[in-house]
Amino acid sequence: MASEEVVVLVDEQDRERGVMDKLRAHVQGALHRAVSVVVTDSSGRMLLQQRARNKYHGGGLWSNTCCGHPRLGEAPREAAVRRLREEMGLACALRPVATFVYRAAVGPLIEHEVDHVFAGTTDEPPDPDPDEVMAWRAEPLDRLANDLAAHPERYSPWLPHVLDAMRRAGDGPRA
Image (tube, rainbow, N blue to C red; front, side, top):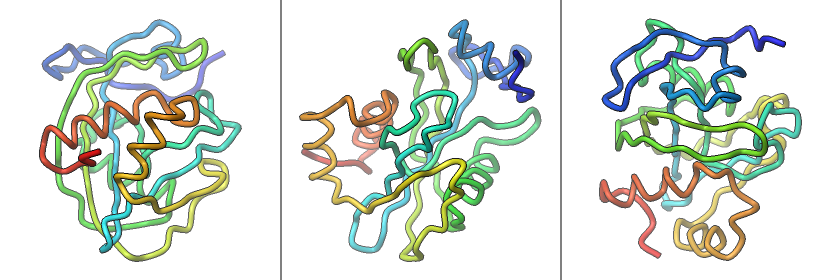
């Protein structure tokens, strides 16, 4: 069963190596390019989404504002802007924060990504796509870090990596 979407395969230095069906890449754990977006409001609260239950992995888990995969020929920043609009119905200026490689099991699938993290700020309320997002909330970063430590099963396995990359870049929670 093909997902009809492809991801861009890369090496650990983010050099393109080809494309693969998205679902197949997650079954095999093939290293591919991804983007994660973190949006905060002017009070510093992070906009979180609860992934729709019908997502192919991580359904029902809380995660960063949005994430996704650049299309072939699409720059990571362009993909971040596109996914923020598609998932959360938002547009705001995004700045690159960090890039990191991670591998994590998500149920029977494997996330193995070179993840480009972008951050932005807006006080506009989201208008999420219900096929992507079942709920959202704005959470102070210190409270999020504490809840994530106490209840990691509520969150996507990539969220700690995203927050850690932001912290190392001087842009994340300190708790």
